[in-house]
Image (cartoon, rainbow, N blue to C red; front, side, top):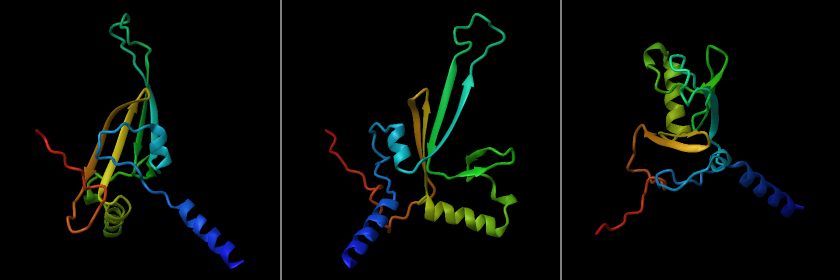
Length: 151
């Protein structure tokens, strides 16, 4: 009985912990499926191109699908829609508790880095890694890159 409970506890803790297995600092192809499986939040919208000045424009009516994957959690904005939490917003309008919560979220949950991937029509357009601060004393496996000799 004790062994079965121990096995269930181990399975529970291993299945509930999501770990990011993607090394974002390498130029390897990353798919939308990998990002969604590794706990990235998905934000998407569509845009239809319309050029009213030139009706013969070949791009008129073309639909663009933008999908952004980011490690920043969604937050409801004033218009009621979900957007990534505004981390770059000026801290002047925030009180001490809001500013402390923002810094705690950046330091603890995001590990001082924002990682975003933008897909346009299912093709990766760009990725960006923004690092707030880098602490050399802590050992972070993702920041240690392999060095290759260049001849």
